[in-house]
Image 1: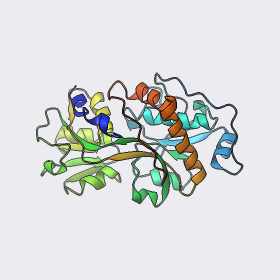
Image 2: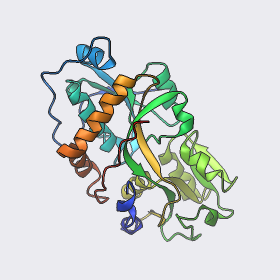
Image 3: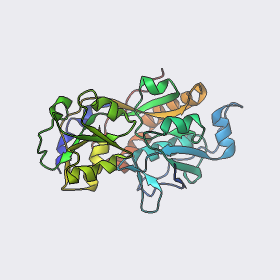
Length: 289
């Protein structure tokens, strides 16, 4: 399929709400839950371990990373990362509550305490860091374009100015919207990236722009209709959002991510969710800002 060609360079990158409880219906085995852990009294980790539950905000419409499965439970790479963190807290996957988050409500959900974490193709940037904290990154994507099969307008994924007068669809409040508005005012916005597909089919929009891995999943779900343009014009470090100022919890998550890089859990999570579509990248260095 053409989108696979578009990701030849991908390996170098790196190089509301409906609430569901349960484990992924994917092929991956569940991470081993720590049975003998203790945390300093008063920390978020101690509270979550005592409660034996955690609420994680994820996407429900992002193939490969966070997609509502046939049984109603989300599955994907972000889901598996959430399970790894929960397991290190001594919480089994069946005790995770998955809450749907979209680009517009991720910070409010964290600030209002509706979720403990957000793992939702969530780009780390300075504006967001003013109101929440991030652990990670655990993956680095890049922004590109989804276009009709054959790319009739010849849009170049590495050159956003190549969109010319084309109408570009993206999600309200996303980093992708901010980025593309630097190059064109012909932008329409929707609630979810998948909502851009019908406007492209009807001619209301010419392309969808967001992170290349998200686009790859949408192409995979709609084979023969769309393709991803070659190249990217940004780097998008995906982080795990949490309450601002909770340094102990952020350090714990960063330690857990680094351990998952070395013990193979991160690679297993990728292989079981994204590995059939995209090559396995090197995990990025954690930024302990």
